[in-house]
Figure 1 (cartoon, rainbow over the protein chains, first blue to last red):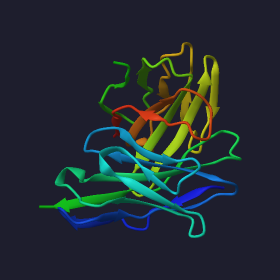
Figure 2: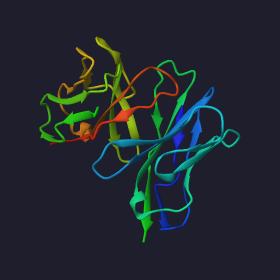
Figure 3: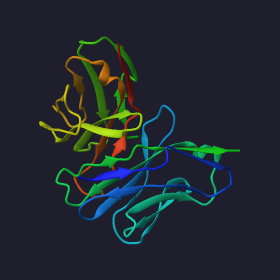
Figure 4: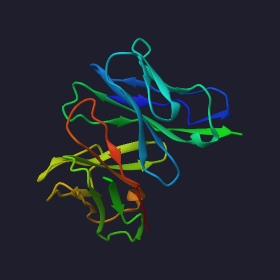
Length: 115
Length: 114
């Protein structure tokens, strides 16, 4: 079975500082990894994904994520946080041997960026 | 612009009642999904469909059903609502079945079962 862990329920960072939201995964086979963001009272918005190739993936709104196979991690990063980045972030994984191509989501991490 | 919509956005119902949540997408996507979101659990898959007349059970399908009579719509029915089904429900769609395919989500329906 595939699973995703987001070890931090909440991450606090000051505006202008770099941010990291952690994600680790467990799958059998090659992983395909996704980050989504959810703003209050809204649906999930796609940020970025790792399929293959360069381990550093760049996405929307200045976010990037680094795939680390040895550590089974896919941490979300941004060099300089904005107050408007405050939201709920979800990591998700899909395995290439998953016949149903199902996404498995982590529990979410709330990012709070303070002015 | 193409989009995915859900209705109603908020619903209060009583235990034992049948409830149907609507999901409509204008992307002409083949695949549609229903998830529920609960604190600490992230999103969990309820049912999904890969095309007209196709439906499949997800991780938490008990007490829910779906039907797919056209490409655009995948209504979710709670046959006899229970308090444990109080949750936020999200519909999603994607164009094709593939490991790299991105799912796109609707705005959600907040359901309260009293």
